[in-house]
Length: 220
Length: 416
Image (cartoon, rainbow over all chains, first blue to last red; front, side):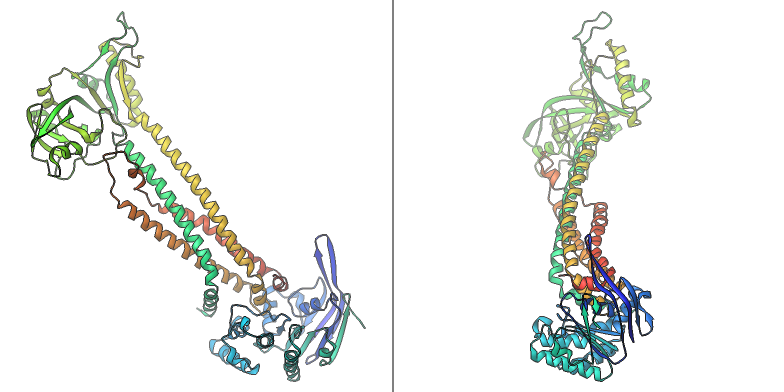
């Protein structure tokens, strides 16, 4: 489902260049639950962003569902992010002025779903994460755990086959973290491919496979 | 047409309307200030022009003088006077003259209904009205050729004379006594701005037919000859011919600048026009600088607000918004804010200008209110302002969003 070959990412910082990924190759099959681990600066978030089509590699090839991602236009990548990939970020990345309902509705809106379909789907998702009664609240009125559940509902809006989670429990207390992990586990069991970045061994233990990164390379 | 996205844009805009209202107010204030500044500037320039033309726009006025050069054995210092027959003499010899009228003048006691004033009385002909901007008030008229031909005892009054003799009553048809001779009032001068004159403002003068004037004061000479050229460009030529012809007739050197007094308003108006042009250019520069200051303020605000939303753009891109959607949203928001601010600025300035114009102006004095209370609203200036500021606001409002929408979403997401 996901195949990366010799992926390199170089950041240009003024006159200096920083190599974040140095030829990463990996393959993820459909329905796999993978954790990416490594110390800070090892390149795990960069790898996650490239898998999620949020960033483009400097060199290497990336195939997603048989398509070469490098050959896709900006808007085609946007469509891939909208329909095939759901994101859960450490700091939630919810729109601060929008309500819980509106935040979950947004990917459906960008996917051109009708008003009726949006309403049905948002209701279903908010019920699934147990926050339907909080639908009119803004993120600032919700706890961290609630915000991450809204972010999870948003990630699932277009029913994507891949879910990417970047330190999904990093900003949560242990109870809320466990709740989020429970939801992710259920989603994996339902057949979704899950890629999660974490440096918590306890959290990564929930996944099937752990990929360890160090200095931009996969430790074998 | 699918209105889902515009509805979504509108709902997002409403949530941020407090921030937007600051920009809207800045645009409103900028529009109002610039439009008012330019309206007052234009008004002042226009009033100056009107006031300048109060005497008469294309006019050469000739008076007698004193020879300052010896000529053909004659000494300098001789008085040169103009005579009645000079009118026909000049008309016959200078074909470039369109109109030529005589004017004789004296100060007399003038009375009506028990009130008595001392005023300047001028004897002239019908063409004087066109040449010297003598427009009668409703219900009256100026002298006509028959009045002059038949030596009618009629008088045309300046509005101050009418007020002094008759108060608020209508003087037309009533009698006044000029130097013990009864005259019937046929018209009152309409109020006008006048910044140049020779024997006081026209508001204080009385005009009678030239033939009737001679019945009171049978002087052989004229105080003044007024000439209107067929074309304004011929004024210098006529001036020179007058000097040559009258120089030959009265034996003075045509190069003698003091032998005749010649007031050429056409030449003056060239200077005047240059001054008005100068005022307008000066105001234009002030307007442009004000626009620049306003534009810097508004565009800075616009840029800061748009830049602040970089992360929001990153979030939207991450969850699948197309580049077009992001840019569209910013275009619509900027369009709305800009239109709202400038619309209210335009409406307020337009109404203020017209409200100020309702204030009465005192034509009896040369008070500053005549210049300040007649601002002129210019749609052209508004359109120029709208285009220039619109362009700057659009660039500043859309550029950050456009740039953010073209970069990798992750770069926008990292923006704090």
